[in-house]
Length: 98
Image 1: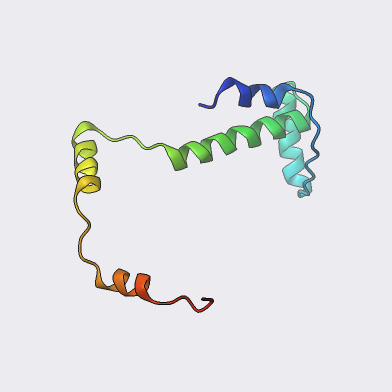
Image 2: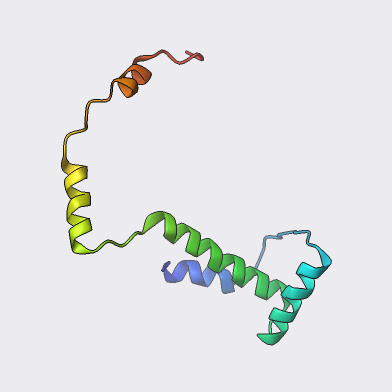
């Protein structure tokens, strides 16, 4: 996923505070899950948020295709752009702040 430096930064001494407000039932659920994993609430929440952040970033940077779809995707990228008069007009229009 991410390099070892990112992983190490989570386990090193923490020097930034994150404050969050939650409903009582949310905190209770988090506490139960943390207890099952023998972790503190903070440790559980930080690890969970960190993992979710990695997942979100990977979703934005990786997608898998089979060979046929990949070849089609590359062909579309390599093909010259289609004529788009509306886009051309937009790009040639002076911005209101200029």
